Length: 237
Image (cartoon, rainbow, N blue to C red; front, side):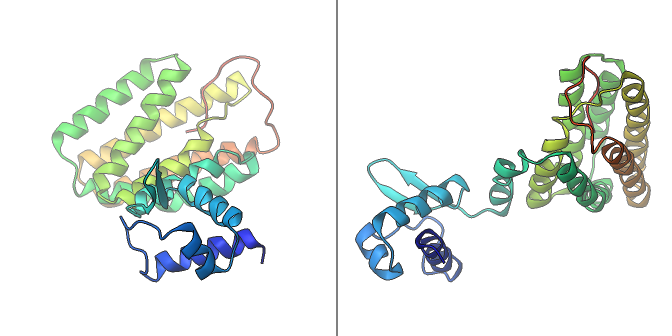
């Protein structure tokens, strides 16, 4: 184990064991170096890494503190690395979405209100009537994340957000395929909304599962084609 790994493991152990709790200020560098058996350089690098992940918070002139350690925030920090995945990695994320998004839709179906149903309907109207790729991506994301938030689990919402973030960056390079994808995507959105509007967790879950399955089909089809599209076309949902 390298000195950096030792410092990271030591700090994580102090936090996981409750010796350092959310909001606590870290002991001095000298004390931590002695406790963990590492140099100041290794300790500082470990602190920087944990700060980037949201575990620690460094305050200028005050020191480093343990963050709130909210599950949603820590999961959200995965976007730092998920954003680097190639298409093959997107496929693995899509398989995870097939488990999580139907669950979120089922939870939302039992909790959603009429105002939110109306809002989701307006979003779909805009998606179906828009040829603007950036607007389409933004509205599509708003539709799915609204459902996740209604589900009522912040950690689940954060994880779905992370898993969806990478696929949104890809574009289908064939215009005909992109048109077919959008056709199925629009229909899938409407099926999800019908399940939600009917307060039917089974129907909403099934529609969400079918919707993600369509995305998975296109990811598999294009898993070896990552060159930028010659013309702007809709991205993966």
